[in-house]
Length: 158
Ligand SMILES: CC(C)(COP(=O)(O)OP(=O)(O)OC[C@H]1O[C@@H](n2cnc3c(N)ncnc32)[C@H](O)[C@@H]1OP(=O)(O)O)[C@@H](O)C(=O)NCCC(=O)NCCS
View 1 (cartoon, helix red, strand yellow):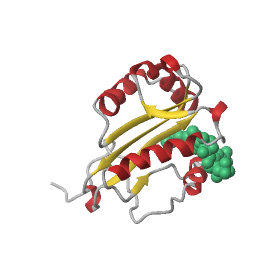
View 2 (view 1 turned 180 degrees about the vertical axis):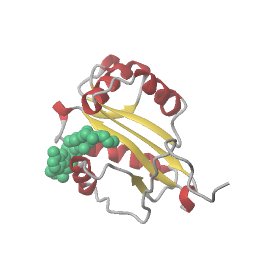
View 3 (view 1 turned 45 degrees about the horizontal axis):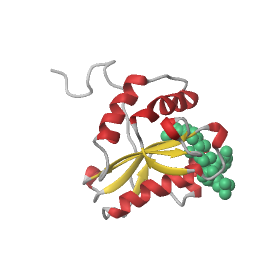
View 4 (view 1 turned 90 degrees about the vertical axis):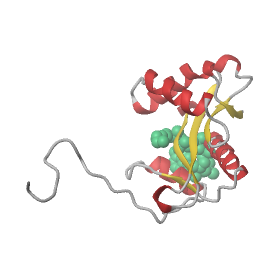
């Protein structure tokens, strides 16, 4: 198994893998992600795949990770965000996720980043166990959210 930058030929395998995890076949979304993080990636944006065996033509894709260096967001010095990681269920618990995270971390470190961040659903204990195993702990930022578009804005009456 090795980790390398994504290629266009990998996309059907990435889309299928995402669909096994989310239940959604999001071809348009993945084309956009590929353009932004694959083609225009490298340096600060990374879309990496883990490939089993010889992996010709994208057939051997068994996992992927996407991450990006973001500068001064939320008042923080540049940090590396990991916003997607998935491993083919047939390949889990064999170190593929660890190898993908290590590869994106190494790329962040190469450009001087000293903080790795991610977000996860509170009830996703699998991904939480994985990130904890990699040494990640609760950070200093907390996410806030609001449902919008359904009610009048909160504020003084006109
Ligand atoms: C989380 C995920 C990426 C882990 O990938 P993986 O290749 O199985 O991970 P690794 O084999 O490198 O495991 C590393 C560590 O993670 C933890 N871990 C992995 N799978 C686990 C499981 N099923 N239960 C508990 N801990 C687990 C363990 O601590 C493991 O270390 P160990 O093997 O020494 O016990 C994979 O399970 C996955 O893709 N899950 C779905 C992801 C998802 O929900 N994505 C959407 C949000 S981005």
